Length: 343
Length: 202
Image 1 (tube, one colour):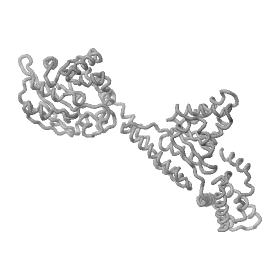
Image 2 (cartoon, rainbow over the protein chains, first blue to last red; image 1 turned 135 degrees about the vertical axis):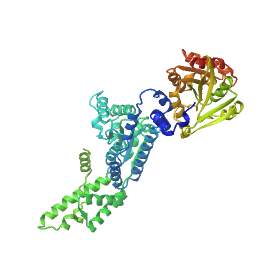
Image 3 (cartoon, chains in turn purple, red; image 1 turned 180 degrees about the vertical axis):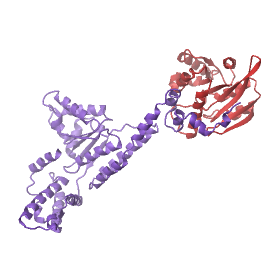
């Protein structure tokens, strides 16, 4: 007679402890289960592979903290959290065998100079690696000169080489609008076409970030009709307010173990407020603050060189006369500094 | 005793076939052993007519456990027994309902242990979808697995309907070289051939 009455659940688990159990837990589709019902159960290895994907939360948290420490950039932080949640849920959905959207993360960063585009790109690269989206998580920073070649056909080759290098990481093209600037015969167009092709081909392998100033980027995106739709994420880096710039100044000084005297702080705030109100095009936000501070540190050093025995407090404090703001920061100097900092 | 498993998609007529086939073999009263997915078993006695009402229905996934009936077949001078097991219908992909998945997992488990597989396909659905492969991979996979067993038989059910007839012809083209029988579980068409096939196995 039928002996199945004695079949306990335990036994059933032992008997079918492979594919059938996996099906029961909703890990494999019925068709896969059938395919492997008699064959070797190769699923174990794959499941272990899935297990190793989960992000190293501690390191991830560290990078998130780094991002949170950046002052301002509210919408950037919000978007990074969105991307994080999206990726996590897509991975969970994939584990549950549900349909998943391919993760396309090409981005456009728009913002005035010194609003943190490069900084955010660097953090993003490491963040995406921790999330398991990018295999390597390195950042390649490029500019027009890196992509555009000297003769016909050279551009595509150069661009493709850079894409190959960037696979598994982030390709960050600063001042991307310059690719479209040269006019009809310019090789920049060729570089754009080549990039458009490769970002479709390798959309799972790398992330392309184009950065530039808001107005110029809008003009750039209009040059190729397919371009805007290929970037699902656009991040606007807004100019910092004077309060935020003061916070940045405080933070930079704290890192360098300096501090502003009350008067110097007042002077700096005054200047920042004025600059923000004027809305100067050459006003380079956080970078200007950094330059001003570095200059102040140098001037403070010159001032203290004469005094025979400076106290610890004096060594730290920056007086109003050390802060030289506005003057001396000619446009050329700023752009030269900019080029150096890109490295 | 041979294990004979009736398997197929949901709502192809596995249960009504089991009950009617048992009746065809002369059973007046059926003792049905239920093996529930949670591991418990129970036994119930049915009159054939009440079994038909209680066990089968037109909804999908009416059967949610293995239901076995022991059939007696005369062979030589004695009687041989065969266990006919009706199973939960299968569906492509991952069923969202855990309970159903457990029931289907049970079916898979039984599929592995069964000696003989009666694979039931809804010929009407085959015709409506324009071919067996259009229905999904599932039936082709069962057919492939079934051929590893000694006694595999593919039953094209619902061939009493005109659509079923056309569907059966489609299946003949697709499942060349397989034992394929047109039946109607509801109207007991083709049962004699099934009986002969089962009998040979005993």
